[in-house]
Length: 243
Ligand code: GLP
Image (cartoon, rainbow, N blue to C red; front, side, top):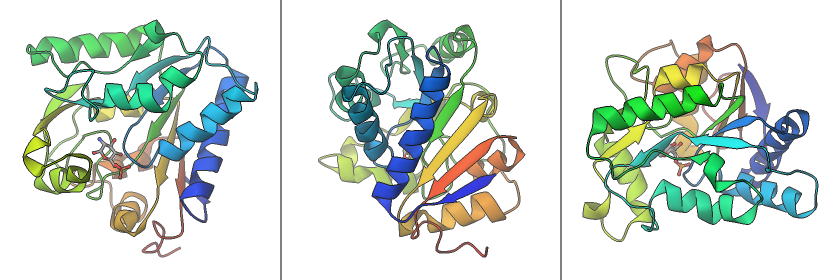
């Protein structure tokens, strides 16, 4: 794991956006694994700026998103589909047909998960997977558990995650209780992983992900076993690290 020490949220966003832009320049038809949440918002802003300046094009890019709330449709402003359109897809030249977000409305969960795994496989593999991290160390929506899920699955969100994400919803009851998420196997198959973390409330997760033992209660710790991981963390998120 390589740790890049960013100063603050802005610095983290600039550095991570440069890494993704470099990937697009090196391989214009690359496959981007994308993430949602508040952490990547600054990255998408930077990428849109680079696109507007003519420095990068998404014309040949394919994207696969990590996760989606179960039960939210595309028009719901809290769905991750809506988020991706709002922050990136509608602002760059990516072909909507080449963007993929799990469909939160699917009733046949097993079939939906199997199909999403097939979509990921059909892309030929993710070149760079962007990840945020939950306060409890989750990546995607792979919550603390007694095992690592390999493929896309439907997960019951923990109270901690519901609490952390309720700030985006009018009331806590509105936060969906289930979500579709890529599994740890999907994430570990990405050629490169770029994890970003900002703020003091991520310090525990960052410490345990980097310096803890690999364990299923802190799902992000599995990244210690991946051969090409870059963590970009700001000062506050690094505050509990020993080194
Ligand atoms: C959600 C998402 C994760 C994200 C995490 C942190 O639960 N499923 O992909 O990394 O929250 O979100 P934030 O960046 O808003 O702190």
